Amino acid sequence: MGDEGDGSLVRVALPTVAEALELPALRVGRPEVLAGREHLDRRVRWVHVGEIPDIAGLLLGGELILSTGIGLPDGGDELRRYAAGLVEAGAAGLVVELGRRFRRLPPPLVQAMERGNLPLVALHREVRFVRITEAIHTWIVEQQFEVLRASERAHERFTALCVRGASPAEIVAEVAELAGCPVIFEDLMHRVVAHAAADMPVDDLLRNWEARSRMARADGRTAVCGDERWAVTDVEARGEAWGRLVLLPSGEPSQIQLLVLERGATALTLNRLLERNRESLERQAHRSTLSDIIDGRYASPQDIAARTAALGVPIDQSALVAVIVEPEHGPDEPVGPLAAGPLAAEPVAAAARGAGARALVGALDGRRVGALLALPDPAGRPGVLDRFARGVHERLGRPATVAAGTTARDLAEVRRSFAEAHQVADAAPPPGTGHHRPYYELPDIQLRGLLYILGDDPRLQAFVERTLGPLLDHDNRHGTNLLETLRAYVAHGGNKSEAAAAAHLSRQSLYQRLAAIERVLGVSLESADVRTSLHAAVMSLDSTGPSTR
Image (cartoon, rainbow, N blue to C red):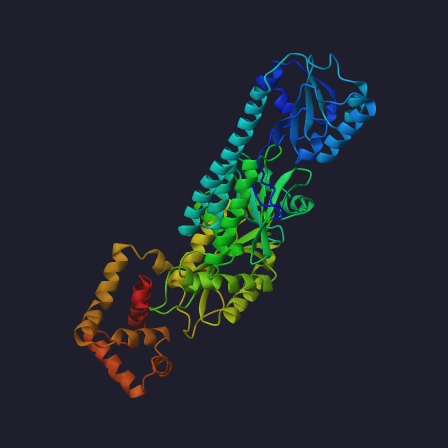
């Protein structure tokens, strides 16, 4: 299949002369190859029965000629011209049935066919040529039908994937299933964007991938190339290539495999055109790998190490630091692909590069971006985190919380590091407060972190309700906002001037509200113990959800 000149390798798998000779219809004739034995791999496009000496003028190329020899010329020169005509016309070979004209084929014909590298076959028994033509033509038609059927099946599967917005990883997995072999989708820098290993171990598939891929240079849009005989095709849109789809068959790729490869590349192109407003291919690959690490969805540490190395982030022998970035977002902001998290992934990745750190960076949900920093030296952690956090704040253009977990030495500890980073992000003061830091770690959240950890404890919940319940009831009944005033007051250590400025109140208004709080709660705010208890209760309340922050 495929049009001439379109760069496609997909063609109907025509039988070779050798395969044709193995058909029962020819085997009964006891075929003997007299010339061109080294060229029995010529493809047979059609079978033609001809008994005229000038048959070459009727050929289009690829025909297997069947003859009884009765029309062949007598002289040696004429036989040599006859053979030369077949070679020039591009015939696949000549099969001559002995007995009616020749008991053995003339040496000039044999020699001429040998010089022209054209297979010459003698049949020692009478055969029905119609059986031969029927068998070979049926083979050809069945191959055409099989290719068309595979094309239709691939079209249906890939169209369904595109319609439902499947990711590149899902498309690559479908290519691997239909082709029955491993598949890699790489970008123009030979970094693995998505892969499907089939039955091959992932670390074997991805080992030293970039170097191996660079050796497989194609001389067309689709080609079989390199020492490993990969089938590769460009993935392109509007005439511009932006990746390659690579098939790794166990032998020479079949026509069906090449067809699936090209249909898969088309599906990836449609995916890019339909999803161009979403995260980049690199971010999708990073997000998928991060999720698999966090959720433990990998066969072995070696598999993940191979995947991350193929993405340009080697994690072997590295100190690993999980970081959560949560940009400030308003209540009316969207969720999903256009939410703050996915949109922030690229700036966060740029911040990691700016800090000199290799990192996997991807959106974890609609609010947060995860980054796994791979540090060659754990002693450099403070400097890298500081540069990274400042780069995040600079590139995002909005306030954000940057939270880091403890350093992990292997994959088993990375999940814990991410859990800690999420905990720190939950407990850190909201962006925009006077005490906000470039980034937070476990020691920074102190009491706030402890209260967050204990947030589900009924005893702490009872304490919060006893301490703040009357104030919350008052605000609900009267439409006041005394809780916000109390939050500003305790956050500034009881400094009324700073609290008034933070709450955007005049000192007189602040005094009136503080008096109302004392009256409602029945306490004195002049007591340090009371202020500490109220501060703890407010932090506990804040840690229960964003609605109260």
